[in-house]
Structure formats: structure tokens, C-alpha cells
Image (cartoon, rainbow, N blue to C red):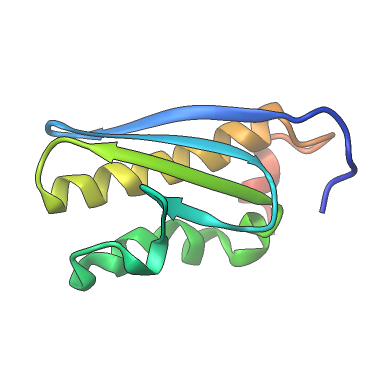
Length: 111
């Protein structure tokens, strides 16, 4: 977990058709919630894998130090899923660009 300091956060959005998801990303314990519910409880269950793609792609260690809270409205179920996925990805990149000490977004792509 990063050293304690002033609370730093970012707010980004993702869109698909008429669905809009706004993600707030701040230092935390690795929680990802959508409309107040854990990521695993988002419906439809058949598309939950799409929501987990950013986590699986970058690895859980990148998400361990941040909390992401997403609010989504508008559109249908599938469009909401894709808007959520986009906002989670953009939130993590923006957080590491702005708030991570000495790393930047380059740290996301190096192994």
C-alpha cells in the first residue's frame, strides 16, 4: 500500500451508446463496486467476465492499492457492462498517471 499522504483521487467516465459510467478511483484496499454492489454481483452474470477483463489483464496487484467506485446509468445491460469496463480501465490508468509516486502510466505496461 502506498505511503499515507493527502487523499488523491481521479474521476473518469466511460460510454457505450447511451450508457454512461463514472468511476472514482482513490487509494484503498482493492475494492471495486458498481452502484454500491461488488463487481461479482453485477447482472447479467453471463457478461461478468467482461467486467473482470481489466483486472485479469493487468493483474490483481495493480488493483490491490486502489478502490474504484462506479456509477452507471442509461442504456441497456450490455452497453452498461462495456461502459463500466471502459471506466474501470481509464480510472486505473489515470490514477497511476496522476497519483502514483515516481511511476506513471509506464509502470502499468512493464512487467
